[in-house]
Image 1 (cartoon, one colour):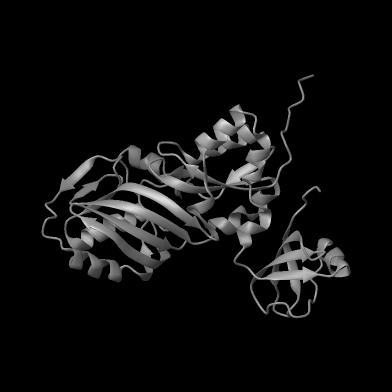
Image 2 (cartoon, one colour; image 1 turned 180 degrees about the horizontal axis):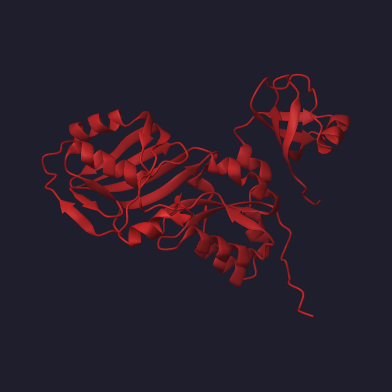
Length: 307
């Protein structure tokens, strides 16, 4: 009979990790999960190894909310080199073409940035994790293959120029889920007529989270080595922080009981549509609800956090 596996601590919450450069998102997740001795953990959308910045790590019951963070808007700060295109649209790829960008003015760039704001169609890059007939596109790309991809509808909410010093510029991007910033930079370069690729990418926002409360992997490793476990746990944010932008609905004890049985409830003064945060006993986070067409609040993702 085999040894019984230790499942780890039953903890729930969200850690805002500052993912280091050169590490995959999954590697960062596994390292943090080990350091926290967590039984269950997941992240909320991969960052390229080249990218740094905000990677929310969901522990325990928070994994039920990760899909909502996947669907949330993102913020990025991206450093772009004009005049060069690469196979991967970033600095890790091989150089494909070099064009002198000295004729590009700040005014030219500002005009092009304005053209890229709003809803648009974007063609996902070959170097992406999208699957084609069960195979990741980046694996096909490494074999020198290119397959037909379907354009995706994305929304660029804001695209601001932070600095301009040829051949480089730094942009602040606020975009919808599914936006490939590498492709955005490459398309901007095409529109300018000189090409471009990403040489630095940092995620600064995911849904309600920004980069002000992040902790580095080094901080977590140091706290673990020094056995500052309480401090590590204090870095975790409560479950409902992932939904901080949603309206809240507070339930009476009776309503909370029926909600936990899976029954939609009519709640006075509740919103008339959309997603809501559910609370029992005024302040106990119960989970996620959705307003039905008849006005009742239906349970969608309920939490089971141990007290």
